[in-house]
Length: 196
Image 1 (cartoon, rainbow, N blue to C red):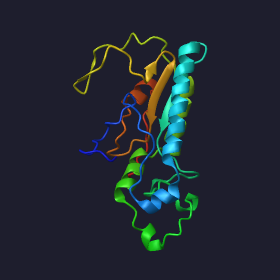
Image 2 (cartoon, rainbow, N blue to C red; image 1 turned 90 degrees about the vertical axis):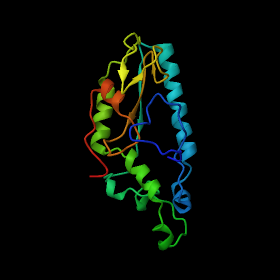
Image 3 (cartoon, rainbow, N blue to C red; image 1 turned 60 degrees about the horizontal axis):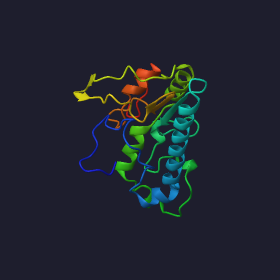
C-alpha cells in the first residue's frame, strides 16, 4: 500500500513476488495489532512447504493455498473494520487516549476493507478448494492474452505441479487484489463487498 504511484484496483496478483505483512501507518494501531510481519512470514513458509511437498508427492497429494484476506473473529462485519484491522474487543490495550484512537489512518482502514473476506465468501472458497482438480501438468498455459498482457509460456511460481496459490478476498470495490485466477480455478465468484 505504500508504493508510488499508488496501486490500482486488481493489480496484486498471486504470481507477484510476496511482500510479508501489512505495515500500518498509525502508530497507535500498529502497537495494538501486534507483529504482522512475523505472521506474514509464517504464512509464506507454509506456501513454500506446500509447493515443495506437491512437487514430491503429486498426484497422491495436491495443495491449494488460499491467500486469505482480512477475516475478523465472529460475525466479521465490514463496519467493524478499522485502521488496526480488528474489532475493538480484540485489540491489545495500548494506553492511548480515545482522541488518539480516533486518529486512525484512513489509508490503513481502506487497505483492510479492500482485503476483507466475508464469512460467506470464506466458506465458498474453502468448499471449492476441497473439490478442485489441481492440474499436474501446465500444458494449457500458452500465450493467451489477458488484459493486453502476454502470459509467459513457463508456469508462474504460483501454478506448479499439484499446487495452486490463489487470492481469497471478497469482491470489495476498488480492491487491490486480483481474483481472476481464483474464479478460473475454483469456479467461485465472491459475493460480498465491504463498501456496500
